[in-house]
Amino acid sequence: MAPANKHPSAGYAPAFVSAILDKALAAADPGGGPLVHAIAGLQGTGKSTLSLQLEELGRERGLAVVPLSIDDFYLGRAERQRLGREVHPLCATRGAPGSHDVPLACAVLDALAHGKPTTLPRFDKIADDRLPESQWPTVHHADLVVLEGWFLKVPPQAPAELVEPINGLERDEDPDGTWRSWVNRSLADDYPELWKRLPRMLFLQGPGFEVVPTWRWQQEQTLQAQHPDRKAMDQAQVMRFVQFFERVSRHALATWPAIADDTIRLDAERTPL
Image 1 (cartoon, rainbow, N blue to C red):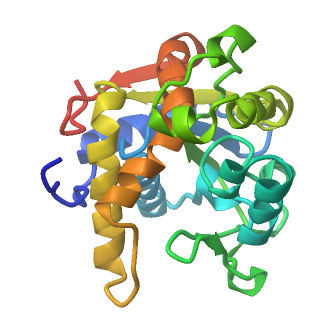
Image 2 (cartoon, one colour):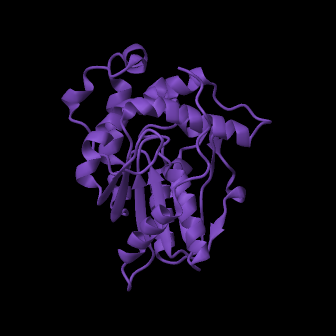
């Protein structure tokens, strides 16, 4: 694959961001706590960028918009290594369903909904571990909470769909399907409690999974540029990493249009169509 440009930093057009914020706020319950608005889309879609733009626009309007990512709730490295020993070696790699602290995510959303001072977990992707709790920021008030993630509300697959490997990672490192079955059970058993806390969801629909390796490599180049004194993943590592996401990603693309409240199609340059 040819080298890719860095992930665009300009973000979405202001009018687009304003329309997303207006619609999210209009759906809020006037008598309740802050609305939780979910943004779903595959890796590299620009979910985090949009979340930060919503935060900034909210600040300009005098509103506290709190952006969160499903990535903030990754299990720490030691816990994933335990899963790697006890369940399957692939469980030690962050990313797939099963590698998140779902009870913590639920607790954070509940605390924000009740207006309590809330510490927000942070994950260091280069160190591949959670930051110490002493470095987690505290939020005292939220008018809107935006949770973005690459597999939000995705249902599990039928067992028969797991039989055939979908890529080289599954074929070579999970030949008997132990890992992908564990991921699927996690989707079925662990995440519904979190999905219940996401009353509305926007789906940013990219062209397809085929663009994800390029978009994910752009993300990694941007991360490296932001931390020039540290070592992010190289391109070969990124190409292997995206294989952990492929099965659930393709299933997400097939199921999200019927699940999301709003769907916005994007072209290969992430321009809304």
